[in-house]
Image (cartoon, rainbow, N blue to C red):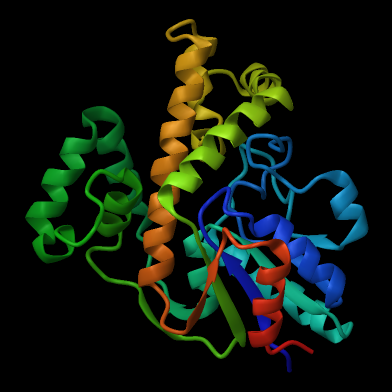
Length: 297
């Protein structure tokens, strides 16, 4: 059985164009590995592949749910494994593309997920809504000090998961899924420039109009996971008249840069057997390096 190819790295590092070229040359089919591209009606802000690209090469796991619907990492794993199997049964190669580390880890590792206690879940969500982040921090530090010191304490989702699971950790071991993981690396100064250019391009392609449609459909509901995504949350204050359009764009640039930094760190620290790929080299050079190391069909 061939190994599925994974192209992982920060936003704007050139994953999509590389995936398209590799798919053209290697009977490839592309699988989305971006947690924002699963949402329907969110195309410009998530930098989804163009319609002509999706017509040329089979693309999978895009536009799965509406922005108000729930979608979990467990659901992604099940669908991704099914899709990989179907692609390989056709004699083609699966190419997973994206920068969502949790999605990659769900495939790279076999997890024993922490149990959920729905009573505690409601209790702590109510506490968070009533008293804010600091209340969760105090509770988590009091009950589970060792685990509290290891998680992102500014992330309410992480705190809620810790509290509702009563301190029981996810356990993981390397899965049996054959993956060849390539991490695209790019100098921060080059990436920062690309991000700024991408935000400007998104505005030209209709990002603001896309956000307005979501705002009109759902109202001021930034708590929805989809609408908390970068490229959307920054424009809600603008639509409320609280900041200028230029400020909203600058916030998007800053948040994207911060996210890209987290993606780089994740890629370097979470996986043991990965190939590093210089994202600044030519497309031909990147294709040649991947094809040299990829155990494809």
